[in-house]
Image 1 (cartoon, rainbow, N blue to C red):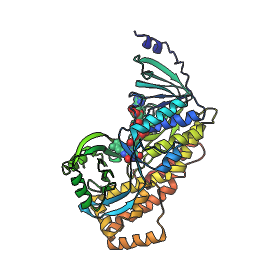
Image 2: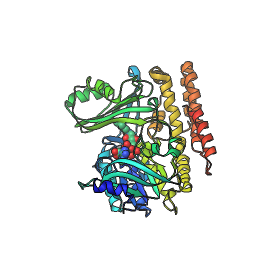
Image 3: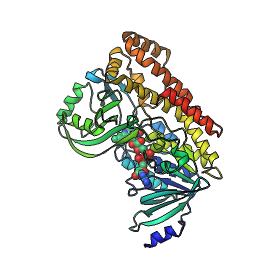
Image 4: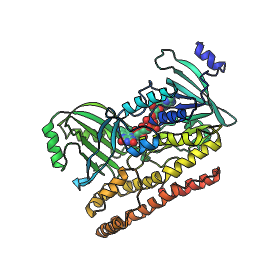
Amino acid sequence: MTPAATSATNGHVDPVGASVVVVGAGTAGLNAALQLARRGLIVTVIESRRLGAGGARWDNGVLAWQYTRAGIAAPGPDEVHHTSGRTHLYGPGDAGPVTFTGSTVHADMRRLNERLVASCRAEGVNFLDRATGLVPELVDRRVRTLALVAAEPESAVLSSRRLQASLFVDASGRRGVLRTQVASLAEWCPRVPRDLLCTASQHHFDMADRDGALRFLERHRATPGDTVTWVGLDGGFSALAVGVRPELDGVSVLTGTIATGRWGTGRSILDRFLSTAPWIGAQHHGGDGLIPLRRPHARLGASGVALVGDAACQVFPAHGSGIGAGMMAGAILAEQVGAHADPGSDDALWAYQHAFHSELGGTLAAYDAFRRCNSAIGSDGVRRMFASGLFTPEMAGSGLAQRWHEPSLGQSVAAARAYARDVGLARQMVPWLLRCATAERMGAAPPAEQDLGALRRWDRRLARVVGG
Ligand SMILES: Cc1cc2nc3c(=O)[nH]c(=O)nc-3n(C[C@H](O)[C@H](O)[C@H](O)COP(=O)(O)OP(=O)(O)OC[C@H]3O[C@@H](n4cnc5c(N)ncnc54)[C@H](O)[C@@H]3O)c2cc1C
C-alpha cells in the first residue's frame, strides 16, 4: 500500500484546510476562485489537467461589459487576437448580407487562463492538478470533504487527499463532476440531451494565399478585419464564421450546429469549408467541443456545492457563448457568499442562485426560446427571414451583445411589414417571440425565499414557456 493510499484509508484530512474548494481551472472556476479569494476566503483549485492547460484552448468571443461585471481587467493586446469590426451575415443560398458592426473581443483563452492563474496566485489561491477520482463525502446531507488523488503543480508526487471546506464549487464544465454525485443537485440538473448541445470547432490558420483571401472577402463584400458569417446552413441553429485578420496574416474559423448528428459536427462543417478555401494555410491552434445550449439549471447550489459555468449551463444559448456568463457567475457567487459566516450554507447558496437568475436568468431563458425558434424554423425558415427583411442589423447586434431588447416602435413596424411579406413564417415565429418575451420576464423572477416547492413550480412554468 502506498503512503498516499494509507493516508486516504486512515481518513487523514489534508492540512490545506481550504474554506473553499473549486473543482475545475477553466475560466469559470478560476474567476470564482479569484473573486472568492479577493473577499478573504481561503481557496484551493483542483484541475484534472496540468495547471495552465485547463478550460478552453481556442479563441472565444467575449464582451467588454462581461469582463467588467466579472471583476477582471479588460484583456491586453497579447490576449486579443481580433476585435470584430464589421460582420457580414449571410443565410442559406447566400441570402443577405446583413452587415453590422460589433465589439466582440476575440480573446485567446490560453492567455486568459494564464492571467487568471497568476491573479489567483497573487491572492494566495492554492492549486492541485492532475486530479483524478473525485468523490464528495457527505455528512448530514452536506458535502464536507472531497477525496481525490492529485499533486502540487510542478511536483512529481501524486497522492491521495481529503480536502475539507465550507463550500465546494463545481466548475468542472458540462459533465459536472460534483453535480452528478450529489443527489440534491443531480435531481435538479438532468443530463443535457444532444439536441440541446452544440458541437463546435474554433481553429486558427496561417494565411497561404493573400490574393485568394482578398478574392474571398471581395466576393462577400468584406474587407480585411471583417468577419463573414453564414447562419442556418446546417440546420436552423448553425453558424460558420470566417474572420480574416486585418494584416492578412491569419484566418480564424468558427463552426457549430446541433449535436444530434443530423447536420454533422463542428469539425465536419469546418473541413467542408476548408476544402473550398485553398487560400487558408496550416492550422496552429484551436479546439472542438460540446456546449450546453439550455437555460441555466434552476438550482445552482445545494448541500455545500455551488455550480458555475458550463456545469450550471450558464451559457448564452443563441450562440453557445459561456465564457462571459460563467465568469460573471463567479463574481455573483463571491458577492453573495463571500461575507456569509458559512458560505456553503443553504441560505448563502440560495442567495447566489437568486442573484444569478435575477441578473442574467431572464436573458438566458429568452435566448433559449429564441434558439429553439431557429431550430424549429430550420434552414428554410432562416432563408425566409433574410428574404422577408426580418433579419436586421439590430436583431443580429443584440444577439451578439448578449442582451435582450424589446423592439422599439420603429422596429416593431418594420417587423410587421416583414411578416406581411411572409405570413407563413410569421405564423411560425410570432408565437416563439412571445415566448421569448415571457421567458425574459419569468426567468429573471426566481423565488427569493428558500422554498423548493416554489422553485420547482417556477422551473416548470419556465420549461413550459421556453420548451423542453
Ligand atoms: C469550439 C468552441 C467555441 C466556443 N466559442 C465560444 C465563444 O466564442 N464565446 C464564448 O463565450 N464561449 C464559447 N464557447 C463556449 C466556452 O468555451 C465554454 O462555455 C467555456 O469554456 C466554459 O467554461 P467552464 O470554465 O465552465 O468549463 P471548461 O472550460 O470546460 O473548464 C472546466 C475545467 O474543469 C476541468 N475538469 C473537468 N473535470 C474535472 C475533474 N473531475 N476534476 C478536476 N477538474 C476537472 C477541465 O479539465 C477544465 O479545465 C465555445 C466552445 C467551443 C467548444
